[in-house]
Image (cartoon, rainbow, N blue to C red):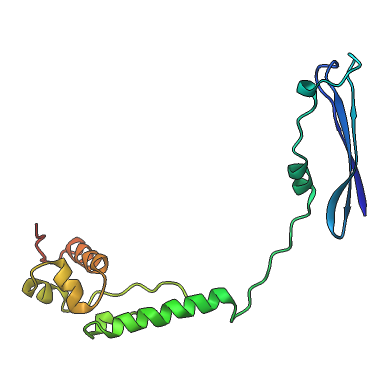
Length: 161
């Protein structure tokens, strides 16, 4: 068990001072003594008492909790698996094509979809980017990214207004 003495002394000697004794044990910190002394004026005036948030003081003295190690099968990993199952269910309703099947990264990070080889031809037959995204079963921003990359690489895809 550790014991700490915290002394609060004002800059103006006419104001009251305080001494707080705190014991830190297995159950956490607890105040064992609180002494308030009058300043040079010899009286305790409510407006001139030291303002201390004792709850905050005790929280500051509480030792930090050790980090909790997560194991496979914990609530967090189950939530990730649940989202993966839901996303597979949504994708199963989409049109199947090689680009619609996402590549899965082995380390659990998001894998980006590669642009299909027939992207320019399909885009020429579709009215807009949203229709292209529907054709491949991918989000619209993915189809926009594919077109942006195709244009940057010198592909002959005219932007549509």
